[in-house]
Image (cartoon, rainbow, N blue to C red; front, side):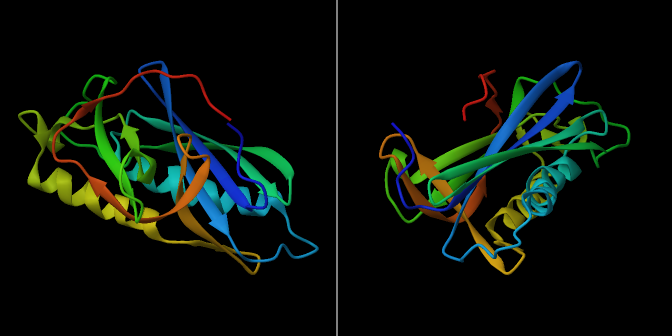
Length: 197
């Protein structure tokens, strides 16, 4: 199924690497703003990369590196894509060590639409063992990840345009406004998937 016609949206896929393995997460945004004539994709991509991957990396172990993002923008049927290149290290260090890359913090994206079509999940590897209490986030770890996830609710304001967080459902081929990002207390298992564009 293709993207719905007439919708201006952005797809931000941020890439991370740890222990020689890469993983990524995808964020969606929609806009009702008009594109200014001098709109600069690279300018938007840099801000989107920081707002998504740049925020997430701060909650990961110091051994994890953010590589950058692929940012795709759909404007009136015209799709344009650009890559950003970053080299930011995780913000959590200390006496702990990183958990295996398959173990992930799960952040559920909530919309006003019920059912599977109304949500999405983000899986973040790079958990520091100082944030672990048995098979779940510790109190300190949960506080850290909840603060990170709260930033995903913020729209991106760039070059007179406002981009609102959304979820794209392949079930309905529609975008749904994201109203919250919930950190699940119990860890999930990240599965390797090919990048979908």
